Length: 400
Image (cartoon, rainbow, N blue to C red; front, top):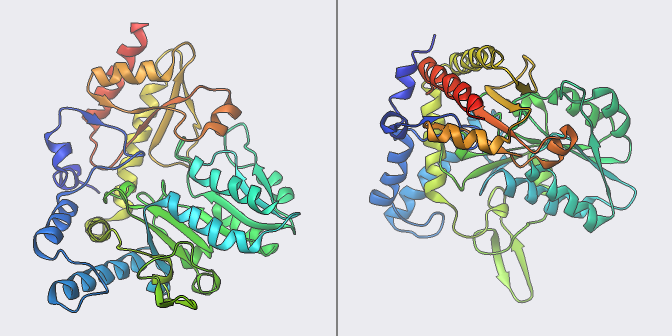
């Protein structure tokens, strides 16, 4: 069983702030271990990687590639060659769309996403469809805001080449049946792209067991730094893909008569990488590995369930996506009040939540909502903070 203070004490902002932070679905706070890793790089080992012959560069390079091995083990990939460092989930998905998709899709073929996707898993595919003449198809949702699997079986067909879905919704926290969707895609020979941005901090991910072709996530939702992310791809697919961006590091030889490209993973990592971000991400993974991941997930889920029970006692409040198979996220609305007004009142009471469409405008249009208020719970939150949150929501609801 998790002792919350054993987790919470590692987060200086959480410990020092007067505000109750319930916006971890947007970005998590950072443990001291991550802050120290970034600081140590710049104070003791600051040098470029893979290039110079001096000792500083050698140390930085060794730490950088050790970090890649840490990520490899964390998601159970077969090889560190399958781990590409990116700026985040958004860049990773764009890389797949432009490097894989533009060379594979043609008119008459289709890409499948779901109604509940984040914009980062919609817009790159829209652009790809425009560039190639392919069709973008959308898996609809049931009244409980879950994937309509019966419809999915009809829209994923022999002309489907890419199926791109989130592991879990960033709006509702609903965990999607990605195993079933991956199996459907395999039956028709389509590749699968899993947006793991929201799930990676909460669920243990084994890409071999999932057998997805690509899995993408961001460091800043995993207690790591901003501006760093990971694209996992099966080695044989990555080997066949051309580079997306050109520059230093991703080449073997450059001449005006032609260029030969570097091996994996460097083929997809042009220019000087976010070295401190990579080291910070590895530190975040090592930090998480100190704890029982199941205990962390159970604790934050219990917080969410307690908050759910108390919120539903408030007159006029409705929870969007109120099912049991979800992460520790609650999106709620008041029938007569705008979500931004509620969030502003909560902020005035030192409660940090998110309000708006959460970069999921198609889902909001589908639900005929202007947005929701979203509270996201993490293992550094306490039951006392949840009680304060509930009291503040009640007070805000009576203000109007």
